[in-house]
Amino acid sequence: MIRVPTRWTDVQRVLAVRLDAMGDVLMTTPALRAIHASVSGAHVTLLTSGAGAAVAPHVPEVTAWIGAEVSWMKSAPDDLSLDADRALVDRVRSGSFDAAIIFTVHSQSALPAAVVCRMAGIPLRLAHSRENPYGLLTDWVPEPEPDQPTRHEVERQLALVATVGYRTEDVTLSFRVPPEAARRVRSIAADVGIASPRQWAVLHPGVSAPSRRYAPERFVDAGRRLAGDGWRIVVTGSASELDLAARVARGIGPAAVSVAGELSLGELGALLAIAPVLVSNNSGPVHLAAAVGTPVVDVYALTNRQHTPWAVPNQVLSREVPCAGCRRSVCPLGTNACLDVDPADVAAAARRLALLDAGPRSVPVPSESPSALS
Image 1 (cartoon, rainbow, N blue to C red):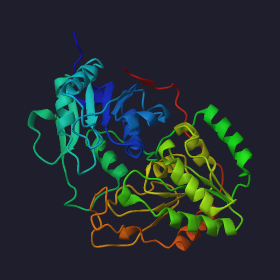
Image 2 (cartoon, rainbow, N blue to C red):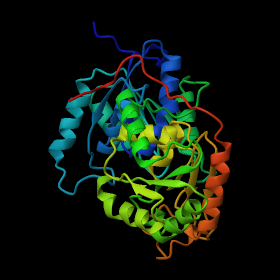
Image 3 (cartoon, helix red, strand yellow):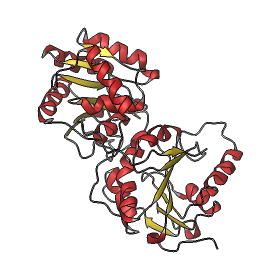
Image 4 (cartoon, rainbow, N blue to C red):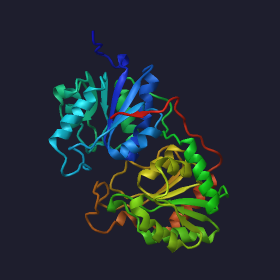
């Protein structure tokens, strides 16, 4: 007889749906930990985007993962076929999951994912929903936002799983740094001369959305101010940000070096884990730094307010504007006025946070490595 759980305390195989980017997955890790803390022997599979799948191997609370592009998310390719949606249902069905928890930001609908989970035969399905989902969800929380003050993304997801009794005392973000990544980064650190425990910083000038982009010349200005105090600056970025990172490093001068495109995600995590401070736009590395316990200076566009650095010393810098909360990828006014932040303030915040960084940080290591599901 097939076991069909009717209570959330009876589940074993849980599908956690988080179809956003790396930072969103990291901000969901405390809620995933709550599942493990509340369900003995839980097996948690993460259904996520390609970007989310890159971080999945580093999350101790994820046992396995499925990477997929789906038609109802902004990142979906224009040519994604109906066959891809059908194939996703089949992949999810093959997992024989007892329950699905669909994690979304408040501006997203959970119902397309709920359809997939219902068609895949998952008996228990939980999500926030703005409208009555009827049979699509077995358990649902009426969407409180944005009519009520917007919660931090971590708080939102912890509150969701708490409705079915899943809780944890440890609400920090999770990221496991592989030992081989730590070894390579120690070698890189020696090569670029950042042995001093306090007088250097990681600077990350890239970001996916133009509305969240602090001007490169202002990053240069902030970096020069730190370099003038004797700091070394390590500029990071993806392979697509090589020119940006090189431009910023050149602008800062001999005290700066770019490692853009040279680090795996695990190695970026390892670099941040030893860094006194990260200076960044509101982007994935902010949450990666938080996951390894590194202080963050976040030059923060006010497109939304729920993604600030979580549970680490931080300074969020922005300028209040009437259009705050626009949730736009491109500034509707064309000014990025909420990012009108003096580079002197950025440098001062980095100095202050580096002084607060008082000792070694640890990263949780899973008892077994997660695996991808094809």
